Length: 79
Image (cartoon, rainbow, N blue to C red):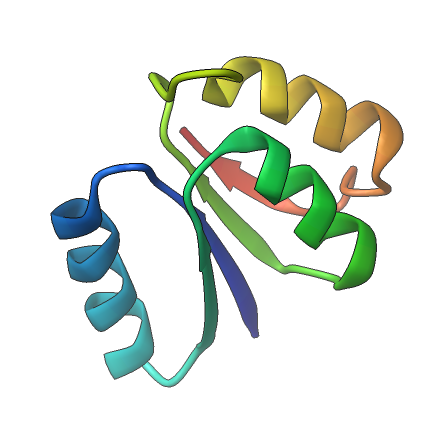
């Protein structure tokens, strides 16, 4: 299972990364919605954790774009 974590707070991102990795999942971490869109364009993810309140592009806007433009309709998203 491929998991993408989109989080601008390093401590929260680290916590999520450790928890998900310990369960045996492959994890990629990016810091903002723009990076998430770029990453989703080059890889397929089964689950995406999105921070709702990031600077630049919040998680809600990133989610809308991921679903509309990046073929993530079958991807579970947690904000």
